[in-house]
Length: 297
Image 1 (cartoon, rainbow, N blue to C red):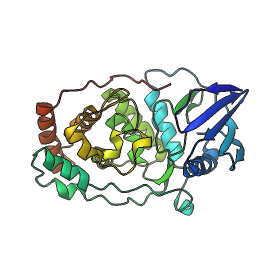
Image 2 (tube, rainbow, N blue to C red; image 1 turned 90 degrees about the vertical axis):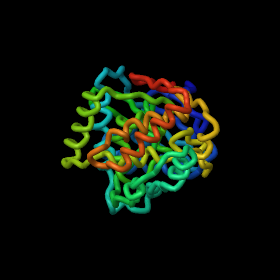
Image 3 (cartoon, rainbow, N blue to C red; image 1 turned 45 degrees about the vertical axis):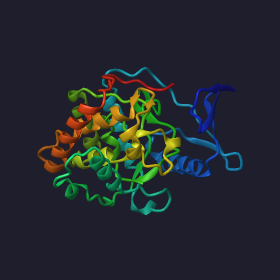
């Protein structure tokens, strides 16, 4: 078997037309991945599970073909996410962890620490569970997607959960918030991808609230292994750290810039984001954001 590159959480080998993956050190992640792959098999969006060994946390699955992606890859990506999200419904409650509702308090403490006026924004941060049971990938990042003649496919479901798919299609607006790389999707391509997502699902809904949820999440400033309950928004007040393509502060500034444009749907939060962005630009060095897709190999 040929050993393939993988993250620290797994070991992966290629064996002809099969992939062998061993999840290292996290039984819950292994269970999530196997469950998600089986729930999504009927969609054609994931590799088929061929064998499972719970004792060694090993999964044998089909090896997906992978082609080079074009500039419009985000359209196939969004359409694939829509098909994946539709794999589950209320009847699957309890089979995977429930998506957590963001707690805005650490973000509000962060805003106060930067001496920025909150204004009326708290009323727009009263998040609730939207009640959806979409199958969420949990980390739909460049590198966890593959492209075939039939469109996008997805791998690496260690963070899979049930929740609201809108929080994943907005990866294209928010620069891939849980990913090592941050990139800004050109507006025309992003809008075409969002249309493709909703055409696939058969309904449409505003995406601004899902974006705001990413702005307030401190865990979206660090890689998965560091999401351990630490208040990373408190950390970033006094220190910055580099995560692959940009820094934690660079990520926050990009997300604030996106939310600052939501003047019609979230006027108070938009105004807060503009004040916050002005303050961050005044005290922190601007960080570059890629204008094209990159991924960790």
